[in-house]
Image (tube, rainbow, N blue to C red; front, side, top):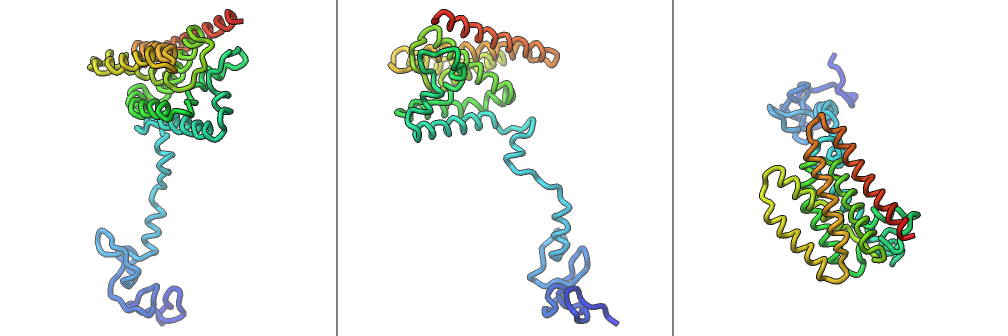
Length: 282
């Protein structure tokens, strides 16, 4: 007696589709040998496969993580730190437009700065002038172009250190040279990236003439165009260059601890300079 076909109570016919008993076919699945009609056939390397075998093969494949998760993998090529800073800064700018001056006043360098508002030394890089789209467009375009290059050269963690330390150094320069000036923008951090890239290029023997021209023009604009904080530019440039110099001088594996100590020492100098200036202003 013939066994019943799967899913039916009728006798199995070898010349009908195992999923559609009313459809005759002479094509067999290359894996399980069951008869499949045209609707149930999936082309394979040799012959066709039935839906059950295709599903079984897919379930056996290793599950691939989402693209955003793969991008954050250690050693990945995606400049996730650069893109994260871009996204956060643009998000804060939207909040600035929505809230009026609330967010700008809360995060910008607002004189007279006091020791009870230390976050402003860093959050100043997240806010930009809401009245000038050119301000944020220039800074974010520079970050978009230069950030991935530098992040690939030094790595994600070190790139973030350069960005933060450059921002801090720019704020310290403003605190000493123009403490009563209201400052917003990531220009100090951007100039720090330029400074770091210049140091690394010189170390690698690359051509830095074009970079020097761009730096010279932008630094000069800070002195001649009103409303631009040249203090933040100069401070950020020096801060990024110093951090990069420490990195290139201590890039061997056995010098990593020394590198961390030297960068922490530079950060301590910036903190000490901030505290000293606050005491003088008080």
